[in-house]
Image 1 (cartoon, rainbow, N blue to C red):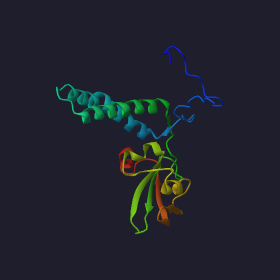
Image 2: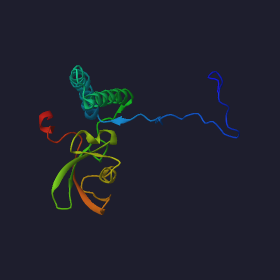
Image 3: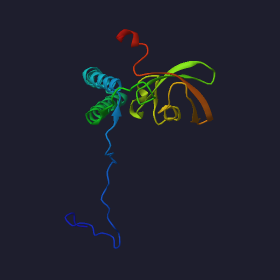
Image 4: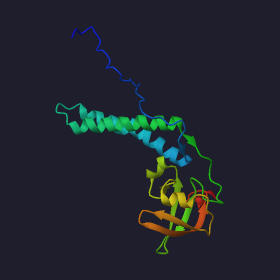
Length: 178
Protein backbone atom coordinates (compact mmCIF):
# COMPACT_ATOMS: atom_id res chain seq x y z
CA UNK A 1 0.00 0.00 0.00
CA UNK A 2 1.23 3.45 -0.87
CA UNK A 3 1.88 5.46 2.34
CA UNK A 4 0.06 8.49 0.89
CA UNK A 5 -3.22 6.67 0.31
CA UNK A 6 -5.80 6.24 3.00
CA UNK A 7 -7.26 2.87 3.84
CA UNK A 8 -10.81 2.49 2.59
CA UNK A 9 -13.58 2.14 5.15
CA UNK A 10 -15.19 -1.24 5.47
CA UNK A 11 -18.55 -1.40 3.72
CA UNK A 12 -21.45 -0.95 6.14
CA UNK A 13 -19.24 0.02 9.07
CA UNK A 14 -20.25 3.08 11.00
CA UNK A 15 -17.53 5.24 12.44
CA UNK A 16 -18.39 6.61 15.85
CA UNK A 17 -16.47 9.54 17.20
CA UNK A 18 -14.78 8.82 20.48
CA UNK A 19 -16.82 10.10 23.38
CA UNK A 20 -13.67 10.58 25.44
CA UNK A 21 -13.81 10.55 29.19
CA UNK A 22 -17.23 11.18 30.66
CA UNK A 23 -17.50 14.51 32.37
CA UNK A 24 -20.15 15.45 34.84
CA UNK A 25 -21.87 18.78 34.33
CA UNK A 26 -22.39 18.98 38.09
CA UNK A 27 -19.86 20.81 40.18
CA UNK A 28 -18.45 18.81 43.09
CA UNK A 29 -19.45 19.80 46.61
CA UNK A 30 -16.98 20.33 49.45
CA UNK A 31 -17.30 21.39 53.06
CA UNK A 32 -15.26 24.48 53.95
CA UNK A 33 -12.70 22.53 55.95
CA UNK A 34 -12.62 19.77 53.31
CA UNK A 35 -11.67 22.44 50.74
CA UNK A 36 -9.04 23.81 53.15
CA UNK A 37 -7.48 20.36 53.72
CA UNK A 38 -7.39 19.67 49.98
CA UNK A 39 -5.75 23.07 49.36
CA UNK A 40 -3.11 22.20 51.98
CA UNK A 41 -2.49 18.86 50.26
CA UNK A 42 -2.14 20.54 46.84
CA UNK A 43 0.26 23.10 48.29
CA UNK A 44 2.32 20.35 49.95
CA UNK A 45 2.50 18.42 46.68
CA UNK A 46 3.65 21.46 44.68
CA UNK A 47 6.08 22.89 47.23
CA UNK A 48 7.50 19.80 48.95
CA UNK A 49 6.61 16.36 47.58
CA UNK A 50 7.10 16.95 43.84
CA UNK A 51 10.42 18.85 44.23
CA UNK A 52 11.72 16.06 46.51
CA UNK A 53 10.64 13.41 44.01
CA UNK A 54 12.41 15.30 41.20
CA UNK A 55 15.71 15.33 43.08
CA UNK A 56 15.53 11.53 43.19
CA UNK A 57 15.50 11.51 39.39
CA UNK A 58 18.73 13.50 39.12
CA UNK A 59 20.80 10.49 40.10
CA UNK A 60 22.68 8.58 37.44
CA UNK A 61 20.82 5.35 38.18
CA UNK A 62 17.10 6.01 37.96
CA UNK A 63 14.79 3.66 39.72
CA UNK A 64 11.53 3.19 37.78
CA UNK A 65 9.69 3.40 41.08
CA UNK A 66 10.93 6.99 41.49
CA UNK A 67 9.58 7.92 38.07
CA UNK A 68 6.25 6.30 38.91
CA UNK A 69 6.10 8.13 42.25
CA UNK A 70 6.76 11.50 40.57
CA UNK A 71 4.10 10.82 37.95
CA UNK A 72 1.57 9.85 40.64
CA UNK A 73 2.28 13.01 42.63
CA UNK A 74 1.93 15.21 39.53
CA UNK A 75 -1.36 13.56 38.55
CA UNK A 76 -2.69 14.05 42.09
CA UNK A 77 -1.65 17.73 42.09
CA UNK A 78 -3.37 18.40 38.76
CA UNK A 79 -6.47 16.50 39.88
CA UNK A 80 -6.67 18.51 43.12
CA UNK A 81 -6.19 21.83 41.34
CA UNK A 82 -8.94 21.03 38.83
CA UNK A 83 -11.26 19.77 41.57
CA UNK A 84 -10.73 22.87 43.71
CA UNK A 85 -11.30 25.16 40.74
CA UNK A 86 -14.68 23.54 39.97
CA UNK A 87 -15.94 22.73 43.47
CA UNK A 88 -18.71 24.54 45.28
CA UNK A 89 -18.24 25.13 49.01
CA UNK A 90 -21.26 24.11 51.07
CA UNK A 91 -22.74 26.51 53.61
CA UNK A 92 -22.17 25.64 57.26
CA UNK A 93 -24.79 23.21 58.61
CA UNK A 94 -27.52 24.62 60.87
CA UNK A 95 -27.26 22.02 63.61
CA UNK A 96 -31.01 21.19 63.80
CA UNK A 97 -30.94 18.24 61.41
CA UNK A 98 -28.12 16.13 60.02
CA UNK A 99 -26.78 17.81 56.89
CA UNK A 100 -23.62 17.45 54.84
CA UNK A 101 -20.83 18.57 57.12
CA UNK A 102 -22.73 18.14 60.42
CA UNK A 103 -20.92 16.51 63.32
CA UNK A 104 -23.13 13.72 64.62
CA UNK A 105 -22.65 11.68 67.77
CA UNK A 106 -24.30 8.31 67.33
CA UNK A 107 -24.81 5.34 69.59
CA UNK A 108 -23.48 2.19 67.99
CA UNK A 109 -24.85 -1.33 68.44
CA UNK A 110 -22.57 -1.92 71.46
CA UNK A 111 -23.90 1.26 73.11
CA UNK A 112 -20.70 3.24 72.64
CA UNK A 113 -21.07 6.80 71.34
CA UNK A 114 -18.86 8.02 68.53
CA UNK A 115 -18.68 11.14 66.37
CA UNK A 116 -19.15 10.83 62.61
CA UNK A 117 -19.57 13.42 59.90
CA UNK A 118 -21.52 12.83 56.66
CA UNK A 119 -19.65 14.60 53.84
CA UNK A 120 -19.57 14.49 50.03
CA UNK A 121 -17.90 11.27 48.87
CA UNK A 122 -14.95 13.17 47.37
CA UNK A 123 -13.72 14.21 50.83
CA UNK A 124 -14.63 11.13 52.89
CA UNK A 125 -11.00 9.99 52.95
CA UNK A 126 -9.67 13.13 54.66
CA UNK A 127 -9.99 11.87 58.23
CA UNK A 128 -11.40 9.02 60.30
CA UNK A 129 -14.64 10.77 61.34
CA UNK A 130 -15.87 11.56 57.84
CA UNK A 131 -18.27 9.14 56.19
CA UNK A 132 -19.47 9.43 52.63
CA UNK A 133 -23.03 10.71 52.39
CA UNK A 134 -23.61 7.97 49.81
CA UNK A 135 -22.49 5.22 52.22
CA UNK A 136 -25.20 3.28 54.08
CA UNK A 137 -24.47 5.13 57.35
CA UNK A 138 -24.20 8.57 55.76
CA UNK A 139 -27.40 8.13 53.76
CA UNK A 140 -29.31 6.93 56.85
CA UNK A 141 -28.18 9.92 58.93
CA UNK A 142 -29.00 12.72 56.48
CA UNK A 143 -32.20 14.54 57.43
CA UNK A 144 -32.51 12.91 60.87
CA UNK A 145 -32.74 14.80 64.18
CA UNK A 146 -31.21 14.29 67.61
CA UNK A 147 -33.02 11.45 69.39
CA UNK A 148 -34.00 9.69 66.14
CA UNK A 149 -33.10 6.04 65.61
CA UNK A 150 -32.22 5.28 62.01
CA UNK A 151 -31.87 1.96 60.22
CA UNK A 152 -28.59 1.55 58.37
CA UNK A 153 -28.75 -0.91 55.46
CA UNK A 154 -25.20 -2.23 55.84
CA UNK A 155 -23.55 -4.99 53.80
CA UNK A 156 -23.96 -7.47 56.68
CA UNK A 157 -27.63 -6.56 57.05
CA UNK A 158 -29.64 -3.74 58.60
CA UNK A 159 -28.69 -2.30 61.98
CA UNK A 160 -29.93 0.59 64.06
CA UNK A 161 -28.12 3.57 65.50
CA UNK A 162 -29.46 6.42 67.61
CA UNK A 163 -28.49 10.03 67.01
CA UNK A 164 -27.38 11.39 70.37
CA UNK A 165 -26.28 14.87 69.35
CA UNK A 166 -25.82 17.11 66.30
CA UNK A 167 -23.24 19.89 66.20
CA UNK A 168 -22.73 22.34 63.32
CA UNK A 169 -18.98 22.54 64.07
CA UNK A 170 -16.31 20.24 65.46
CA UNK A 171 -17.36 19.54 69.06
CA UNK A 172 -13.72 19.49 70.20
CA UNK A 173 -13.28 23.11 69.10
CA UNK A 174 -16.68 24.49 70.13
CA UNK A 175 -15.34 25.51 73.53
CA UNK A 176 -12.60 27.56 71.82
CA UNK A 177 -15.14 29.61 69.85
CA UNK A 178 -17.68 30.23 72.62
